Image (cartoon, rainbow, N blue to C red; front, side, top):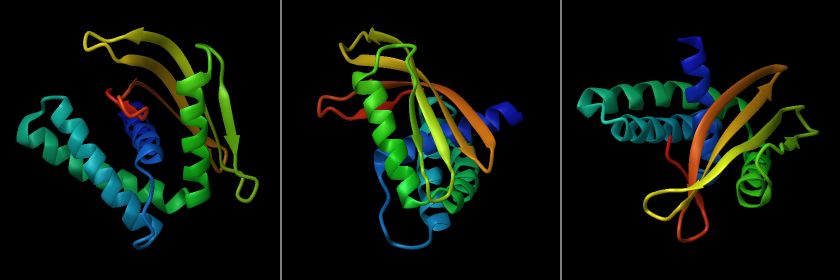
Amino acid sequence: MARRAAAVVSIMVFGMTFVGCANVGTKATIGGLGGAAAGGLIGAAAKGGPAGIAAGVLVGGLLGGAVGHVLDQRDQQMAQQAAHQALEKTPSGVTTEWRNPDNGHTGTVTPKRTYQSARGQYCREYTQTISIGGRPQTSYGTACRQPDGQWKIVS
């Protein structure tokens, strides 16, 4: 369960890097709302039905609030830049790193495999690690390149 929770946190952090953050309230509120939305989407994508979507919203909201409270706007910006660089231009197996010198938070994104989906999209499996206070959280996922050039998490 702890590994799954860590994966969900990391996926949400990765997702938040592509969604961006609005300056409409506290970091925890933004993270909670973003996490709830991401959790609901993950629940729907997993075909969990209404119960899966509700669980995704609840868990995503709680975990997103915690992540949003800890990661500041600069962390998210740096993570977004590293993720885009890694997915767009970095060869498989090569790690892209970021570090916020103001608070010591760090992260890495490592593309693992690139392939073309049945829909013709280029997709990349990746590993992402975010370290806050020396505690790394690692997740594994897949993102696919959208027609507008953005990368979207699909699993």
